[in-house]
Length: 283
Image (tube, rainbow, N blue to C red; front, side, top):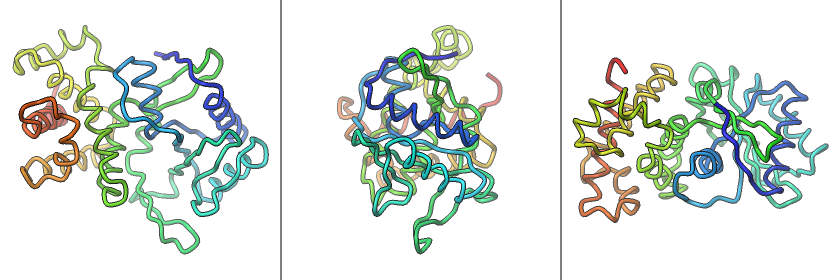
């Protein structure tokens, strides 16, 4: 399936430049981060509008950080970008759009973690990126540019890991996005699947579409990601549920569920369904 969206000229120009540079170097890439949520969920799936973002994030599959540097240099030499003076993985387009580039690939194996920067002081965790790349969805932009984006469940997992790794730096932004995925988990689930494949779950949850869709989200995570990555998702979510009132994740998402009389109970119920989908056989 190929989604189709229409976006502004500035962002389409940036995406076209990335696609050309990556194609010339034989590099696979996909959209990730907040703008992938905007493009896939809000624009393509027509889910409600979430947190706004001005920058773009992409992930590139490379054999080494030297290959990443060549890609960045091509963008700056041929496509109107310039490097950021302090942030190695960021380039800035002449339109003012920031582009953050996340390298991943065999150079980071087996732990999918590496250090970079002038003094190797910056640790980057790219667990799950290989799986997200392999399952990336196609989006036709403005009728003439096909790009790849991390899928819905894939974005949830990458965002969960980002929340875990940088909560002290980013505050609740990542948790706000995670809440968005939980509340809009029905976006990628067709009615045929919801009332067919997941009919028993729907009945068990009292025909609560959000809860049943979170179960489907868990099933998708189990299908897409390696056992090690899916297990890490389960460990994080289980730990947060067991923490109860002391859960950082539930606390960070609390404001996103303020319309509920008991936001913490609703968040826990949604997370519990994701875990049930992750651990369930069949479907």
